[in-house]
Amino acid sequence: MALGLLPVTVGQAAAAGRDIRGTFANQAGLVEYQVHLPPRYRPDVPMPVLLAIHGCRMTGYTFNSMQDTSRFSQIADREGFIVVYPSQSPLRNLLGCWNFQAPGNQVRGQGEPSLLTGMVNKVVHEFDADRKRVHVIGASSGAAMTSILAVTYPDVFASAAIFAGCEYACDKVLTAGPENISPVTTARQAYAQMGSRARQVPVSVIQGDADATVPPLFAARLVTHFAALDDLVADGTLDGDVDDVPETSARVVDDGDRPYVKTTYSARGGGAPLIEKYLIEGLGHKWPKGGKADFVDPLGPDISSLVWKDFFATHALP
Image 1 (cartoon, helix red, strand yellow):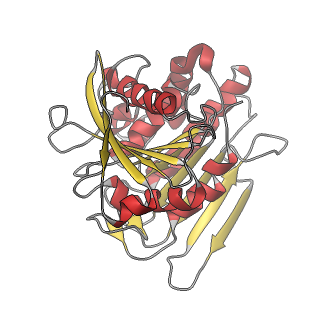
Image 2: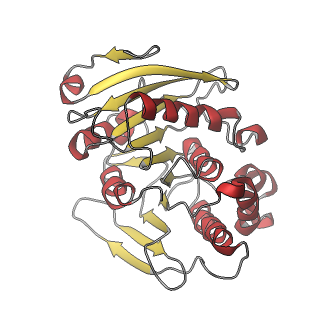
Image 3: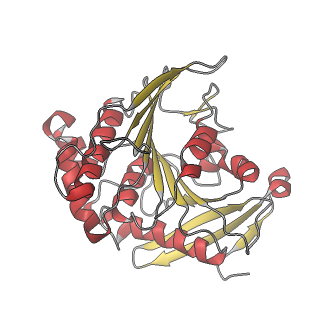
């Protein structure tokens, strides 16, 4: 067993898969995390990895956890991937929020982005996972951190899903007001931060249209932001190679679930979508069809299954 890893027995969940706790430390501090290995895990068969980042007043794997909220461990057992659940330290934030507003947490090689990425790289190495299929999803403050990770480490994360979050450098938007800073402006800042690693990172935006904590305006901004960023990555100029005009849009209604509209955005000339957006009708600041936790809506859609099967499972690093 590698140093810093502790197997955890969790009743029936342990029979389905294994939960192993660990720590990672660097110059930015220390992060505790739990890894979920599905039953079919074998070191000689590299598996995809999903980093699942909780929001404020949550943890990764103990009380009111991202693990219980999202049910990604159960989906991993069925679909065959590894899940990593980090927990924010109360020493960094008493409410358990990720500190996306701090300028030091918006650059590569320092702060919380370096902790989370270093942690993931450690997990990939220790469990012989597939480095080309490492994905990230975050909720609320974890979603804002997900935007940052997609920008600062596009060479690590194959794709990113942002659940009730905001764009890169959105601290400036929150301070000045959304009407005073264009998402294209923050996209230029994101492009500068990407530097020589610049890449069109596929992004899924997930939003409830009744969310009063993170209003739907921020989902629209995310689409425009990443479309402009993808446009800049294409050739260094904003010339319409990628824009925020929908390629497809469909309203989905399933019995017993909340209706939602799924919209996709592709590069000029078509091709696979670079951005997708789920706008879920009547959903507040909660995870739809989640498990037993505080910020859960009992109604669907089952966004955890959808985002894995229809989004993450279709992407890999070049």
